[in-house]
Image (cartoon, rainbow, N blue to C red; front, side, top):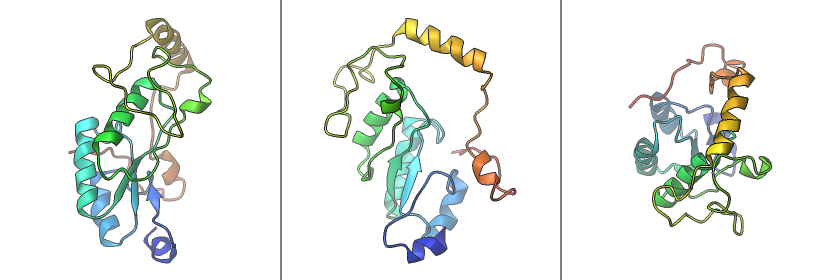
Length: 169
């Protein structure tokens, strides 16, 4: 990635080559990334994501966030995090527009306005759980049999030695 970054006219972003704290020093030393696409679930929650943002800011790396087919609870957390972190300078990714209104939160709290989601102003994350929708989606989840998340599986197709690790702080 560093070789491409050296030739590319724009900063490169990744959520696959740098996925743990241990990946940051070589990526920084090689100027491999310009934007780290974080995931607040994967990197340890909101507080740990703020720590990650500070680390990226120290080394001049912009921060953004990617989505993994999240629901409204996650989008609300992501929206608050993006508003609280000064170096989220590129658009964050969400799959919400393609979910056809299927969600576990009551409609209305999160809405797109001119390509962005305003930060909710009500207490907490600013959303209300739709428990009936949650029950339906839970049943779908259990029936699907897809209960294990593997964020590093794809990159191992290209580098079989890539370690299956999660960030640990």
